[in-house]
Length: 351
Image (tube, rainbow, N blue to C red; front, side, top):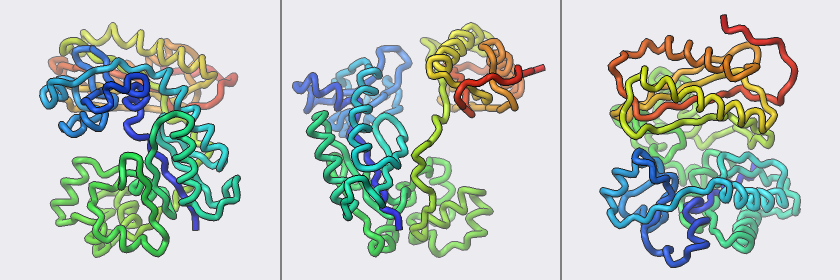
C-alpha cells in the first residue's frame, strides 16, 4: 500500500507577489500581463470570490470584477520560490513528481526521515514551507495519486485532507465526477447525458460500456470508481514539452500569422539549447476568435538539428489541417516534445 502526498501551493503566483505587497492581501488581485488579449495566470482568493480564475480572459475578469488589481508576472521569481519548496520535499523523499511550479506528488511510503505517518510528513512539509517562504500549501494524503490530488483541493487554502485506506469507499461514493482530474466540460456533459453524477453511479456501470463511450479513458474511469490508481510517482518524470505562444492584439487570418512562427520557433530552439535537450516531436496550437482551440502534432524518428527543420515540420502540420483561409485567430503557439539529452544523431530529413 503506497503512501502518496499531493502538495499544492495556494494561489502560488499571487501569493508570492503578495508577500511583498501585504497591503493587497484582502483585495482582488490577478497575475496577468497588460496585453489586450491577456489571460489570468493566477487569481488571489478575494478575486476568486468574484468568479475570476486562472486561464480566464482578462476582458472577462474585468467585467466580473472592475476593481481588479493586475500585477505583471515574474516567472523567474516563481521558479526560485518553487526551487525552495522542492528542496524541502527532498528532505523527506527522493520520489518526487513535479507537475508544475506549484504542485507535486511525493511517495513517502519509505521516507528519508523514517516517519511512519504520511500525515505527519505532510504536516511537517507544510510547516517548513511556511517557515521558509511565508507561503501556505494544501496537502492531500491518500493511498494513490488520484485520491491524493482530489484530497489536496478538499480543504483549500492552507488545509490538509487525509484519506486512509479504510475510508476510500466512503469518500468516493458521493464524489462528483467533475472532481476527477481529466474530466473536462465535454466529458462531463457526456457523463451527465448517461445519468452519471458521482463515482458511486459509475460503480454500477459495466467496464465495457465505459470503454465504448470514452475509449481508453473509460477504463481509467472504471478503476477510479473502485478507488484504484496504480500509477507510480515518477521521480524521473521527463519534461513533457517546451512551447511558446503569442496572443495577437487583433484577430488575424492564417496568412497574417506567418511572420509570427519564426520568432516563436527561435525561442523554442534557444530554450532547447539552453537546457541541452533535443526534440523529435512538434505540436502547433491555434486559438480561433471564438476561443476554440485547434491542435496538431507529429513525431519523427530523429531529432531536429536546427530551427529550419522545425519550421518545415510546422508548415507540414498546417497543411495537414486544411484550414479555411477565412478563419481568424487570436493566438498561435508551437511546442516540441519527445525530449532527450542532446547527442549526435543522424540528420532528420523532412522531405
